[in-house]
Image (cartoon, rainbow, N blue to C red):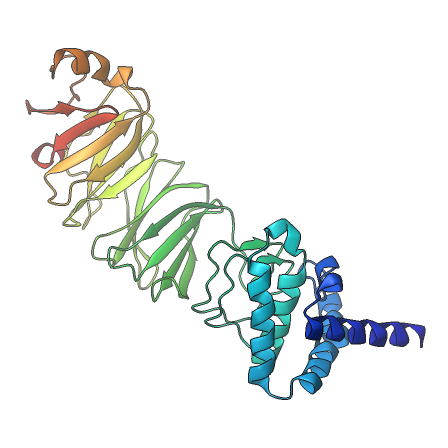
Length: 332
C-alpha cells in the first residue's frame, strides 16, 4: 500500500511538472533506465511511464496537443548544456516513444539522452546531431568501431569493428542490411569500391579480403603480407592497393585477388593511400618522412637514389611533404 501510494503521488507530481513546464524531478532520475535488468525496465515502464502518459492524456486529450507540448519542452532543453539537462530529455523522449510507438523523423539534436532504452525502437530519419547518447540500449550491440566507409553515391555505409565484424547499411545509412564476421582478429582497414558493389577489408594478419556487399559473401583472400595499415580502390575499381608498416605497397587485381605487379617498396611504413580521380596517380603517405627520402628530395629536388621506391622503372616521381605520387602505369 505504501509503495502504491508513493508511486501514485510521484506520478501526479511528475505530470504536474510536465504540464507546468517545470522539470525538476525529471532532471534527477531516469523513469526507465536502459542499463537496468530487463525485468526492471519492464516494471519501470508499466509502473511509471505508462501511468504518467495516461495522466498526461487526461490533461491533453488530443495526441497532437500532447506531442506539441513535449516538443516545446525539448526545445527549451536543447538550449541548455548537456550537463544541465540531467535525465529530463531522455524521460521526455521515452514518453514520446511510448506515445507514438516510434521515434521516426524526430529532432533529437543537442539533447542529452542518458540511459534511454532504444531496443526495438524505430529511429529512421531521426536527427541526433550534437546529441549526447550515453548508456543507451540499442537493438544490436556494436563492438568498438575501428573504421567506417561510405560509397561514392552515399547509399551504402559500412563499419568494421575490433571483433572483426562488418556492418553494412543501405538507404544512405538509414537501414541496417547485413552483419557478418569478416575477420577473426582486429580489423585495420575498410574501403568500399567506387561502384559500391564490393568491399575490401584487412586485419592485423596482413591479408586483404574482398566481399560482395549485397550478399556479404567472400570473393577472394589475398596472399598474406607482413602488415597492412590502409587500403584504396583505384578509380575504375580494377585494382586494390594496400600499404603496411613494412613500407611495401601491394597492388591486387580486384577480379582475381592475385598480385597485379611486384610490390613497390619505400623505406618508411605506409600510413595512407589514395588514388587520383582519373586513376593516373596513387598517393602514399609515409610514417617517417626521412625514411622515404623526402627530406633530401625536398631540399635538392627529385632524386632516384634514397627516396625512389624499389621495384619501379624510371618514372617522374614528385616528392611531397608526407609521401609520394606514383603514376598508375607504375602501380599496376
